[in-house]
Image (cartoon, one colour):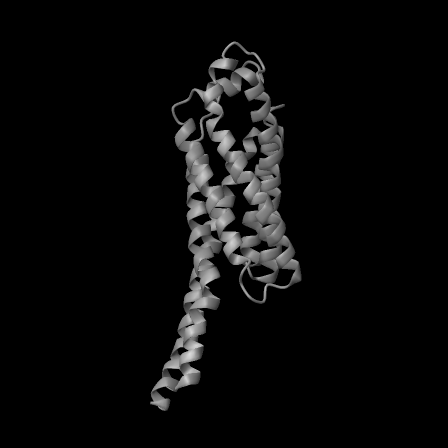
Length: 236
């Protein structure tokens, strides 16, 4: 009876990280997809300063970036929880460790991005203010790093089948690279702006992988609980 009780007590503790990571990753995917879908655009004319001003004063700026901030928070928290899982292996431990740092920095960056609209009046006349430069370099550095981090996580996780599988790998890789390239160049050229819709694949990847994690954990708990129940009844 004591052996059965010990195994039953340890199960929730070892299963908790991935059980939390799956739903958080899926929720982050939904928020990322929705935030990108309602992200304000610009007319495509004028200078980059005037294009940014158009977006900053758009009524959808705050709803869009609130969702994107929620997405990045969910991603960061999910990976931090997932890193506590046993048996990750040295390669995945390294990838998730690096991405955890990138995700934390990018969440701070998205917070600055959200409140950049407070400086909209300063660039109304086309002037490159301090807020404009912060916005430019924030988006040029942190967002591309986050996109590359997603791509690396999707590839490493897909190949090891710890975060998705070889099929989901393509979604995260293409979405991450598209987001990275579009974000890195948006402040300087319109050439790659068309890649932003393709970046929505990150949201789809996160939802699919998050659901896979949750279902895997549910099956694992079910498979372990049945033998433990039999042993409890036998001991009794």
